[in-house]
Image 1 (spheres, chains in turn brown, green):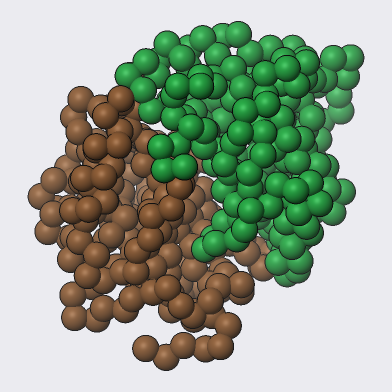
Image 2: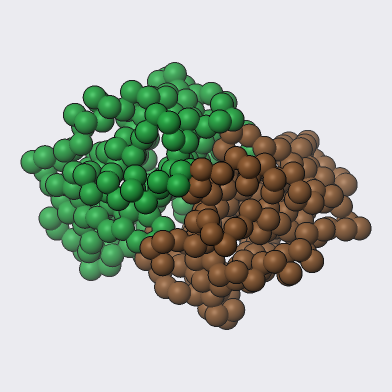
Length: 196
Length: 196
């Protein structure tokens, strides 16, 4: 666990905001936030989101765990995700690195994450001029996984199971980690929309 | 209304996604989407968002109009906004430019937009290396308007009335328009949160 003075380039993070369109939203959220397994991430819940910080795979695991635990077949719910890594203003604190058990929610996600999810997302890369090429690479990865549904203004559309989408996010973030200093993935997941 | 082949640098856009945490979310959203004044923007509602495209001030006006019309004092509601302009992949279609009446919702927003809103947001500038300086400029504008509440991981926090926040977004986007080719403002607005 080696940090540098201002930031630590190994710390990934995700803000997870959940919006169950139900009068029971408090009960639903409290339960999933409490039962999600946090062995591998630092966690904090504020007015807007639950924030996870740690190794990239652990952050994806925690975000997926929370999303899957909040799912109810009868409730239309939306989840806003901001994955971020490499911000020059980041600080080397508020994180956990767990190398022994980095993905404690993975079994739960495989078992319960097979419901269908609609997704819009945008991939943002900073400080480079060829960022449009990087976006194209990221979209190609979605096509290879048969998740790509189309592109519209400002976002790309995906459809797949929860487990499939988070596996894709992990692949995107691993790709980004190899090629880009600072990047953000903004995704919105929708389940049981009456518009569908 | 002069367009170029691939894009039109004058077309601004905003995706507005609204999440009323209530069993009555369909009624609430249908009503506000139908009553919002769209004289100055192109509009489309998909599974995720209502999308407005037109001149920047008109897009801010339409987004604010929709947000204020969805507000109910007894309902916790969240609004996700993606303002975007200058994407090299944008197309010169799906827009309205109205120079005679560019902000048809402004009176409504002044009259009904005086409720308190908590906001998290991030400003993203692309294709340039000094993007962190541009973020600092944008945050300085919030401080000058007394909306700044603090910074935390990946986002800046604001608090103000709905009318004040959208006036600030308009200032940020006008600043960005002068200085940056391609930029995105991602904001999440929260009202009546039980966490507050």
